[in-house]
Length: 136
Image (tube, rainbow, N blue to C red; front, side, top):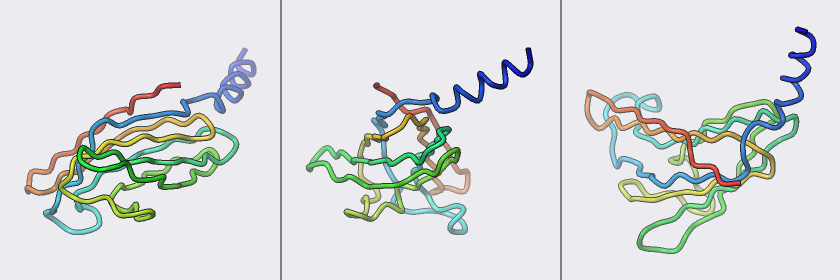
């Protein structure tokens, strides 16, 4: 019985996640309090790729007052996680701080996406996180 469960779990690993995700809320605080890089205010997209192949991911950023920007292209190796700070996305252009935005995350294989923000503008820091919305 144990051997059967392990084989089923292993087989299912490449089926975890979805290919299309959205984060409706995004905002990188304009300044920070504390040592960098650990306490730099930031937004992060956390991606789990439980597949046996690399995930090729495209992120598009949407604004309230201008056209979308993207895609920002990243690769998540097989059976790995990647915590990509939106602050570090620069190609095709950096995401402005202190500006509302939203994002879509599209992958060629199923992935799991979580959104996290660290707001360190005060000494009493705030950390928020939530699973993104998937729509396959």
